[in-house]
Length: 206
Image (tube, rainbow, N blue to C red):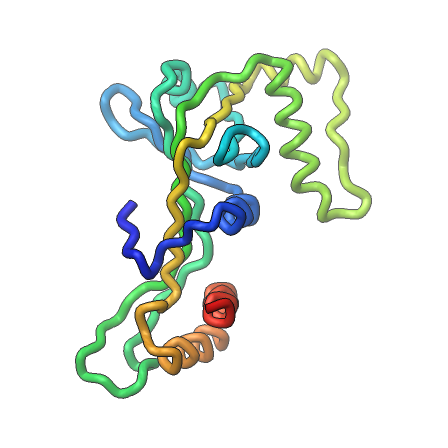
């Protein structure tokens, strides 16, 4: 991913937090010599290796899982909030053009297929991660036959991360006043509120 220095996010804790918050990722591999993508929920285990590992699963009918058996590098893309930015929001300047603010993380690493016992454990982790927001949380408790049937229809995988790239394009190349103007404008729309909040956080931490 092309990442200009002023938009780069390199703090591992911040990258991990982003990947957890926007955990529905796009998994990209090669299939029959062409790019192949699947949209999948992923669970980040930060305790595996220096950068963590991504755990997930897909339908056995999805041919992409075959690309994960070779040990080749896979790419998981995490997309966060984004919004159009009008040059009308900047201080008067004839040399400005529209742009798009966004947040994205790309995570790379070799993949492997999980054996059934690890897949079962990963499913519990994924469910528990998302159910913790509810009271009471639902628990994954299946009969042996139902469990075996479910596991037979999916393929689990682990991507042990070797590098993570973060691009948080939040108008860091603009003046403080321009950034505050953009935040004020984006805050007025339902779609823009989230990226405006992220811009505010970034502005205050500098």
